Image (cartoon, rainbow, N blue to C red; front, side, top):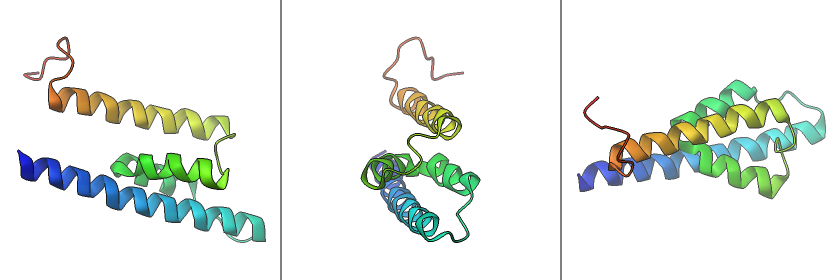
Length: 99
C-alpha cells in the first residue's frame, strides 16, 4: 500500500509540474500572439493528476481562471479526483468500496 501511495503522489507531482509548465507556455504564447496549447491538452494533464499544478498556475499567471467553460470542466475534474480519493481511502462511509 505504501508503494501505491508513493506512486500516486509521484504521479501527482510530475503531472502538476507538467501542467504548471504548460500553463506558463500557453500564457507566454497568448501574450505573443503565437499558436496556443489546446484546452483539451490542458484538461488531459489535469485528469492525469496535474490539477493541483494547473490550479496553482491559474493563480500565479492569472491564466484561464476567468474563462467559465474552462473552469466548469476544471472543477469537474477536481471533483472526480476528490471522489476517487474518498473511494480509495474509504473516507466516505456511504461510498461503498466493494462496488
